[in-house]
Length: 325
Image (cartoon, rainbow, N blue to C red; front, side, top):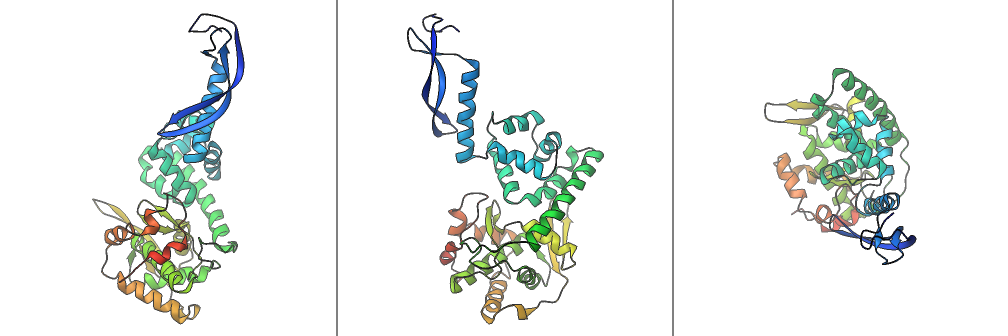
């Protein structure tokens, strides 16, 4: 190996401190590099230089992006090949491979999408449907079969085996499946758009926590681009539809596609305390005349939404900043 600065071939390796600027972030780490023994300049060594570059990317992904291990785990969770999963998220297969090998950083759009899938893995069904044109009939059927298997397992784990760990993210309340679905039944007794329902659930739990220091349902909420939503909301709604608790269906028009929810069971008020019923009633009346866009815009002004990073869980501590006048 020859030094580009002085031409010497006498080199040595030492541990070197690197300072990389990656997407506006300063990344510091140590890694072995090759130097010229004569002038002490850095000498190109493909193996060492690639190792240093990959280490910088690895540190950046752990601090600001998504580690390669999590991307691999996400794909394997659905039991999808790299070829099929790359089509689902809309990137080339070689691009996904570079993410999984840790030799490149996902661009912002893929990064957000991957984080959303990690936080709410069940919404892959909507993503596949939106990108249906990208798949052959054989691929589409294969993906849907694998996703159906995943959702069935995920629903069971979420709704039947959810453990109680009191935290600031569930409002220090044990997850209560019956209350979750009866809250949905109450809010959707007359057909309601999915987007509006999810916001009303957020406000009901957080307002009750503000007044009583505990949530109604024990649900965790996270920040998505269209506002605060219950974690794993797609699984919750799909399971409710499967169990004939609600009617959860898409409505397709020439200009857009949206989802409606209509309750199919009678509301069981005996599950709730007087105070809980008062909060549910208040939320329903407060947002009665709001359409989906208006309640989304309203929720975007909440400190809970503004201060929380995309795809991260929202602390119930933000409930004390909510003021429904």
